[in-house]
Length: 84
Picture 1 (cartoon, rainbow, N blue to C red):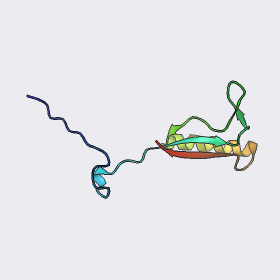
Picture 2: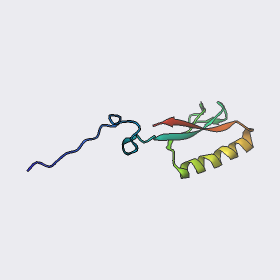
Picture 3: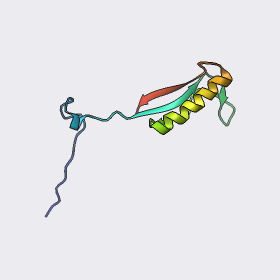
Picture 4: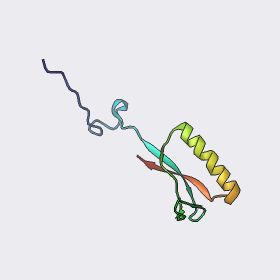
């Protein structure tokens, strides 16, 4: 007997149906003004690595952002978001 295979196509259901709503997956990273930090080769950078937007990652990056703003000035570091 052949096993039953079910496939769901995201976005094919009614958007108002909460059982079939596409989850919003976001990523976050720490950004800063160009020239505040350098990579391993000494080149200026303006952003860090993207992380999944989770409470723990957001908390950790917020702590780093706040410390960066204390050292380099208010508004020098911020969190950036994107859809994953």
